[in-house]
Image 1 (cartoon, helix red, strand yellow):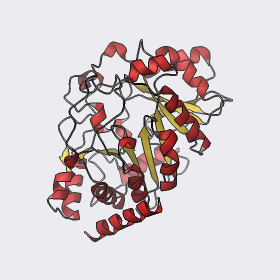
Image 2 (tube, one colour):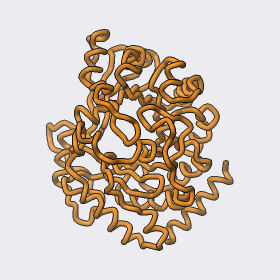
Image 3 (tube, helix red, strand yellow):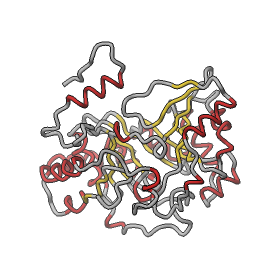
Image 4 (cartoon, one colour):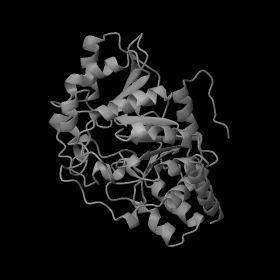
Length: 372
């Protein structure tokens, strides 16, 4: 372990060679944050777009490969993967991350595909943790390899974890993912809790006729466990055969839960939170709703994405408007050139995505390729 971290320090060494927020009196934290963004000048700030949104959260897909074939994510036959030579190396990931962190990114989430299938994932986390100014490194994973890998990830510095689990029924898990492994995912959640990840976040994509009858079962998980179950509206991606009739909206989910728990209470959210937080009084954990389809949160979006092949996506539903940082890196572009590319892309970010019905008609990468 120490040998590997030492090698990451060498990587960082090579990479390096190549106002306090305004607080209005008597205003809520969300209003204060909104005023801060309005007053923030975008001059020389490459991560602030033309609508005043300052981007402090970077999601990096480290691989397109996955050991599951989830219904909402990709077709059963899989997708055409990028050649390994065109996937960002660990050195390139650290270099790109460093550029963004120097400009104000304070949180990085590693995604995939499935990020833990990448053999150097521990080294990537260790390298990122050495970037001055980076406050949090998180990961989104399906949990299959975590029972053996999580202790090493934690020693490398992993701060937060999201584990995908769409059903609490083993046979339904195999229908959802087209693979076995449900007991390992449950074990991963238990281990994350034991290792002190509080909350351990559980991502659950809800689909009508598949798992919408398990909402209460998932809420009950929060009774005695420090988990945050986040119910995600089913979103359209190329190859996932999205159908409006399969989508369960935020309002529908909330009503179904309140039929059993009428005391369900809304919790305060930070300005940039994507999940609308709720809590059953007396329960240890909480639930949340990610409402990308029925109630988008574009106005407060502070997230940017790097695909596994090195493209910058300023919006999850951006379609073809990607910018290749990999090609620029490999052609020897200077930091100033890279920052100009990033700034130009960020300034082009639209006010909001195309809307629920239009999204299903847009050409976009399969979810597995963009680290959704």
